[in-house]
Length: 582
Ligand code: FES
Ligand code: MG
Image 1 (tube, rainbow, N blue to C red):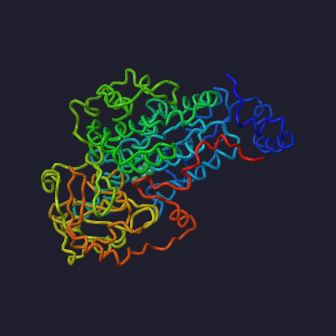
Image 2 (cartoon, rainbow, N blue to C red):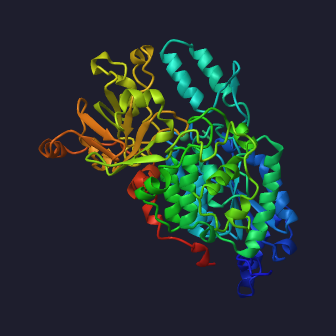
Image 3 (tube, rainbow, N blue to C red):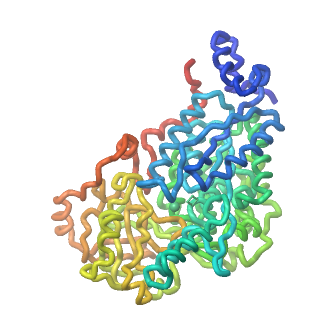
């Protein structure tokens, strides 16, 4: 099949012969020949997300060699370029600022340069949604290559997983069970190789969901970064994207509403990160598909937990891969009639065809729908007089927590309110706060505008004194996010956020909040009169922007409920069809 490629508009365009020499010349200075560039071969971008500032994705610096081999063998020409770095753990004030920034940068590259298709190299949390959002805006043939998780971590004979080990050790440190030196040793042990987080945190979740959407080759997301199959997957991905460029198989043909609904189902079944909610919503909106709060409830809430992987379960990434990875999870869901798999994927086949013969080989890790690890593992969506939308990850609610708090799914708690993480750290151990088992810790000022970016700070730990008494977690609520590796039953993403006048702005320490998880309600027990008196006081003032992007971000970002999107970008879709001017 020969179709005219968009790169030929640069390199082989009879209407702009005068410009062709200029377009060609600098690509030759590293050895490419004009014959290659003018031979009608697809030019394939490799969006390189790895760098020293993105260690979770650093494996892609090596994998790119195998991607190039695949591209070359299939008759394409590779052009690798950098993505704005995104590193979850280190970027202050939060890597959430980088998602929309990397998105913007990638849109400009894909639209403005002579590329016919692109390999998206994903790994750390937001590197997946940022690139998928951009591929949708441009609507250029695109394929996701995950970098894969790190090897499993071990410490003193126990599995120690990314993030999960940190949260557990932080509590042991507070209880005086370990010292700081041991804390650091455990952290190091949890990160034993190249790769992204080895728990089902946000990174593994988003890579799994990209695969569930149909954007990567079958079995791609779970292969640990150092495994031989990872390099082989990179090669096959390189080969396949050249064919996709020739077929003009675009994200818009793959990212249907059915694909997103399946991703919601898969997210529940794997015990996926709460961050899946804004990221999947953002990817859907950029693809022109609306995902509503009702979709998470109707399609996701009652899906059972099938994957026994931390933080909702026991194992880490190596066992998940060996058990069959995402296709084995989807195989179970398909058998139970929970998916919509007659839809196209990047393989050129339907998702149903991709899942053929993918039953798991390891029943300790992947459970059947009929006998799951836990029932009803999806997000519980809440609303009430404090916010219109918030979610709670049901799969991490422990039996002890259920027993202590939930009577028919409901409980009441006394609010202890913090204005941002600094305030929490400064005051949490102050005896005057009088925090006990009947309290809920509330974090506000942590949303997209307030932080800015929206921070993973809602999974707050109780005061040290309580931990020493064996109370290792309290209910928490906030307008920010929580780490995907957290085992805390936090109520997160309260929207609208306090900084734009959302209800948490009016909450005060000592107020009683009532939750009813079955009814999906959360309300502060205050009369309308008291509420309106407090509203007249105006919301807490967020800190000033420190950089130009923070200011731009704040002026364009929407709430977490609708994906914290760069709102003005949403009308742009399929911009590949409006060629840039010469
Ligand atoms: Fe980058 Fe978890 S911090 S993958
Ligand atoms: Mg995170």
